[in-house]
Length: 149
Image 1 (cartoon, rainbow, N blue to C red):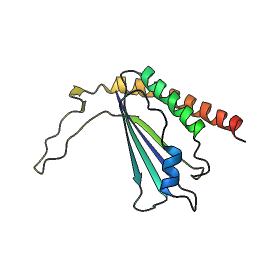
Image 2 (cartoon, rainbow, N blue to C red):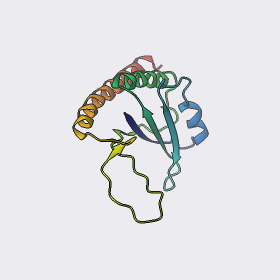
Image 3 (cartoon, helix red, strand yellow):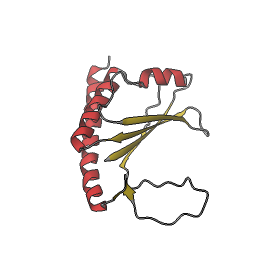
């Protein structure tokens, strides 16, 4: 299963990308194949978009990655660096399509790593993942409230 997280944060006035990166950068990996991309918005250079592509063999592996992320954010909160409004999007890859060719493309059914996508299974997994993310977010927020000076 391949998941994508897209998190949009805005730097506070006077803060820099370097300030953000130093606070955001993890001290521990997720324990599953994960690629992180950090983007500065061309239309608002204070807006930082983090894109994570996570490959997990099970929702349990994803849960472990979420637990690690909660600990990272508690150890290195971003509150002094970013505005309070954060836009979080999280989903599951349902199709990998290669549009590299400069010639006409033919429609193909959705697949991931060559395996046809079972949308019923995807929706069930997404329900589980949504519950996991909500729980992890609540845990993070509660702990930050109690552990902040």
